[in-house]
Length: 470
Ligand SMILES: Cc1cc2nc3c(=O)[nH]c(=O)nc-3n(C[C@H](O)[C@H](O)[C@H](O)COP(=O)(O)OP(=O)(O)OC[C@H]3O[C@@H](n4cnc5c(N)ncnc54)[C@H](O)[C@@H]3O)c2cc1C
Picture 1: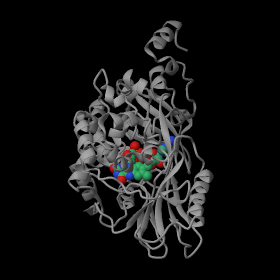
Picture 2: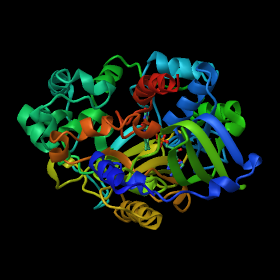
Picture 3: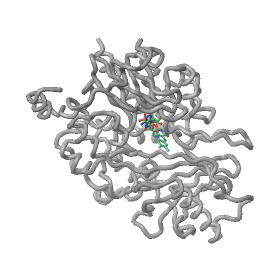
Picture 4: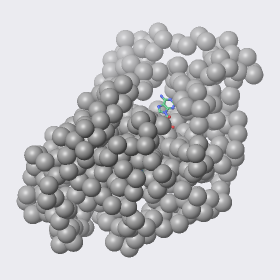
């Protein structure tokens, strides 16, 4: 029991909850076989967790263990293999920037990359999915001039490409609701293009402009302008993670979650993990968190006051993607285009699109909601809108009944905070947590929600971990 004096000092410094943590007795009872001792425990085996595990273990000489709740690596990378044609369809992560951090990572696993074509052989139809009708007379405006104006604004914030190192005060334009920013700079004609990249934010016209730039900023503008986006030549982005899984072998604990994380016990973190083979104790010098740092994910921790005050502020979007068979016409992609809302932006919750996959009868869809949505609600939304389009005669009767072949929940995505929090220094407070209690952080909440840029961001975090272990 700490003395009252230490409790007071701890409370002032924000460590009150740590000092009050009840001792974990279980650790004394773990057998050697159930105890894993490593340099770094990585929580989450998605884009940044897998990348970190490979770099730390293969290049930087550190032992690692990855705790991953699913039975595969890759996070938002989803690939459906059509049982009819055996063709893979990526319905999660699609494309990467042509950066050395990307090409080196794919080359390591001998996964060939190819440029993403900027044009599609398929026709796009603009349908209001809430009415099931084609939006009469609508075609997207020529975005060229408006995109140039948008790019001129993006150039004012070069630091956004590497995260949230925002100046103080934060530039007022970054705090503007994006709808106001559009009006201020007269960039209405660029909205369909920007929405293609930024629709995941949910309430597109209301979010602070900062988050639009974090979805469609300088790196994306450059990859688009130079036609340099890359994807896997086999059109199977999961190949990267399958090969990484082979390399990492038993260093990954699948279907595993943290039960309790006690940081800094005699210089080591003691992390109790529920695995399919029972409880394990991980003893690690450092902890690298790559999962979304929302309070719900952090219940195994005794967060200190500062951590709690920062992490409680997150807002995020509910997002599902999947593949539907016989949902929309062959060779046609559907772009949800709201007839009556400003700039034709659909209102939440909405199905963003039915993109033709190139494989007969299969379309990829995504759904966006500002509020939580269950799988059942999302499936009902999709099937209801397909049915409406068929009733209205917009989609001809399909060869068979529409079926959802695959669906994945990507929630939480688009981690963000209100404009007021941004201006009050949220990101300075967030970044100040890096390394605190021997805990390091990377992943989508910490920089642009984009695998390539997050790998680059992670390259900045790994040396901090290495240095702290010297
Ligand atoms: C549908 C979709 C399409 C995208 N397309 C692209 C694209 O084309 N190009 C691009 O660059 N970026 C794309 N992104 C963004 C990109 O996927 C993210 O920026 C990137 O995956 C973030 O990496 P991460 O490591 O933070 O999270 P993730 O890749 O999501 O990894 C987090 C991992 O942690 C695991 N996990 C979560 N909670 C726990 C827990 N409590 N315990 C243990 N494990 C847990 C998850 O299962 C997951 O494997 C897309 C995102 C989505 C949702």
